[in-house]
Amino acid sequence: MTEDERFMKQALDQAHRAAEMGEVPVGAVIVAGGRTIARAHNLCERLHDFTAHAEMQAFTAASEYLGGKFLDQCTLYVTLEPCPMCAGAAFWTRIGRVVYGAKDEKRGGLDFSGKRDEGLLHPRTELIGGVLESECADLLTTFFARRRKS
Image 1 (cartoon, one colour):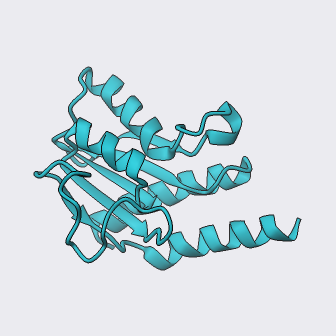
Image 2 (cartoon, helix red, strand yellow):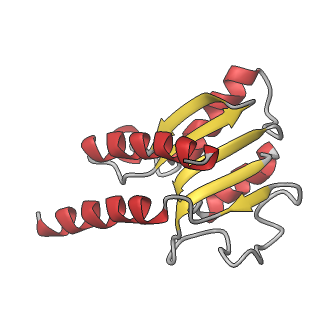
Image 3 (spheres, rainbow, N blue to C red):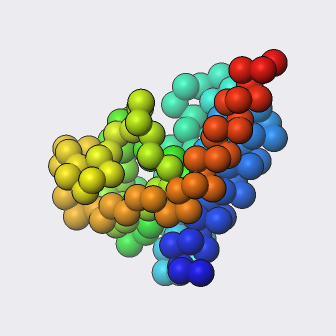
């Protein structure tokens, strides 16, 4: 198992927690120096806040942990491709790397082909997509299939 897969599994654990709470199952972790410094999942329903995405919660927790707003030495692991709002927030944090699992064809803010819009992520941010993609996508597909049935 690669380091990216190991940390994505932590993000998947967070996504499972979100699903258990009735939240859209997206999880995120932020890693610095090989150590997880922030864990988060979607809290939009619980907080009645459409901006309470996993990434936003993780950025806040990591910045608080580090005592600063820049996360240039960190990696964000997130189970779903960040939306434009979260990609914009990632820009402002200057995060070093963004690693995501499943592609979000409808609302994704990044281009998996590698030709991303430089305006969405900081020019120095490395982007990697498709890590544990099927596991991340399956969790979302299952969640929404159950939601449609009820």
